[in-house]
Length: 363
Image (cartoon, rainbow, N blue to C red; front, side, top):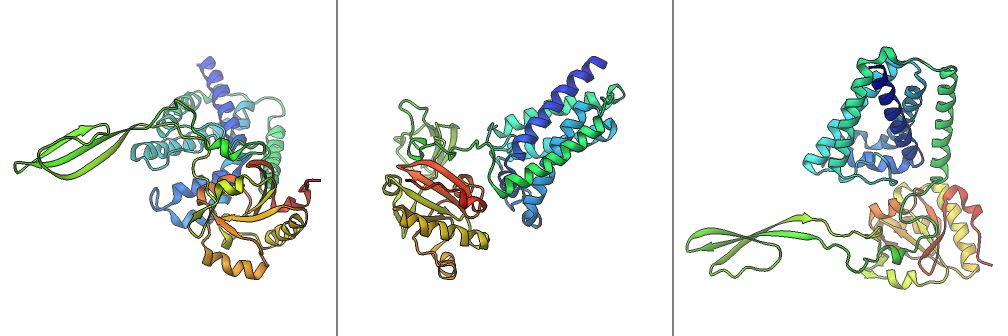
C-alpha cells in the first residue's frame, strides 16, 4: 500500500501540476471553455457566465497548488479530499459531455493537448482510481521539509502569473495563430489527407411501405417515392489547424486579398461591446502611426456593422472592420482589443492592448 500510494502521489501530483500550469498560462482561454459548459445547451447555468473568468482563475490556481501540495505531502487530508471531490465532479462532467456530445474538447490541457470527449472521460476514470488509492492510504503521505513555506510560495507565484498573463498575453502560445505561423498555410489540407466518411439512411415509400436503404454517399436507385434522409458521421476527416478564418465585409470574402498584403495591421475586437475603452484609445493611436508608416490597417470582429457603428464614431475608428467567427477571433488573441502584424499572411507580431507601445514598426 505504501508503494502504491507513493506511485499514485507522484502521478496524480504531476498531472494536476502540469494541467494546472498549462491552463494558468491561458486563463482567458479556459474561461471561454467554462462559458461553453455554462451555456443553456450544456449545463444551463447562464447565471455563472458573467463570472467565468474569475471561476477559471480560481480553479486553475487551486488545481496547480493542489498538485504542489500532494507532491510535498502538505496537509494530506485536505489535499486528498479536495482532489477526490474535484475528480468526481470532472468525471461526471466529461462523461456528460462525451455521452451527449455537448463539448468536443474538455480543455483539460488547454490548447497544448487536445482530447476527445471519451479520451477525457477515460483519463478522469484513471485519475479517480489513483486518487482513491491516495484516499484510503492517506496515512502513508508524509510532508516534506518546508512543505508549508513552499506551498505558500507556489500560491503567490500562481497568483502573480495569472495576473501577468491576463494583463498581457500567454507566455507560451499553443494556438495555430502564434507568432511565426502563416494563416494560409494553416488552412491548407495536405494531399492524401483522410476524408470524412458519412453514412446516409435513405427513406422511400415503396408500394405503400417505408423502406430504408443505407449507403456511404451515392443516391440509391429505388423504384419508389423519396421521403427523407438521415446523415451520420462514421469517420472524421482531416481538419486543418485553421479552418474557420475569414475576413468578410458586406457579404464579400476579402481573406485572400488581405493575406497577400505585405504590411497589414489588424485591430482585433472580438465583441466590440466588451472591448476595453482605454485599450481602444491605445490601439487607435497605434493604428494612426501605422498608416503613416505605410501599413494597411483593418479591424477584425465578430460584431455586426450596426454594433460597430457607434464605437467607430465614438473612438474615431477610421478603418474598415471585417467579420470573423467569434470562436476564431477568441482563439487568435486573448485580448479585447488586440493587435496583429501580418506580413503576406504570416503573423509577425501579436500584442495585448496594454503592450501597444512595444510594437516594432517596419523600418
